[in-house]
Amino acid sequence: MKNIFKSADTCFLTENKPNKEEEFTQDQESVKTNLPVSVTLRQQFNIKQSKNEYLYITSCIKIGNTLVFTDRFNNRLIICNSDGTDIHHIPLSYEPRYMTVVNINTVAVSCRTDRTILIINISTDSVTSTINTGGRCLGISYNDNNLYVVIDGSIIHVMDLTGKVIRIIPLPSYRIHDITVDRDRLVCIDYTSIYCCS
Image (cartoon, rainbow, N blue to C red; front, side, top):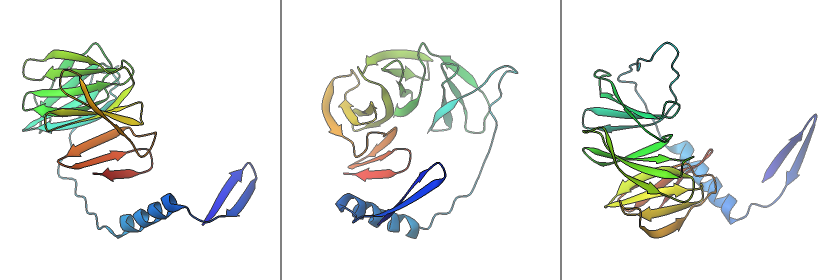
């Protein structure tokens, strides 16, 4: 394997043998390029905002015909119909980042800087409980009555809805920022890779 290191005006070329992790990565890269992907935009709408307002949406989920967005700069959730109509907001005391569906009326929202997870009833527009995570919480996913929460980018806390940590799962990278869990699969992403774990 050849590596190129650039420094100012100089370029260095080195050669070394790939280790097992690099070989695994190379195998994964070959799989990535062979997957056919086709994406079609079916609908687009703009979320109306005030003249001096700036939105910073970091997460979006769909529950039935309802879309829920986290607006990081304005500390709120934005809720609307799937066609972009009937927009309203749920103000929050913390800066929301990622979220997951708990049930038809409830979402769990991670607030990284505040090291907090909010359980929010979107039908009543109210925060029903607050969980202190003790670390910066990033990606969050709900599966089989448990929350899976990325803590400090390097581990996952598996917890119940009261915040009791059931187990800790180490992650394949120290820069993981979002995850999803479905049945027996955990998919997580960092800034350059997607990982799928059992």
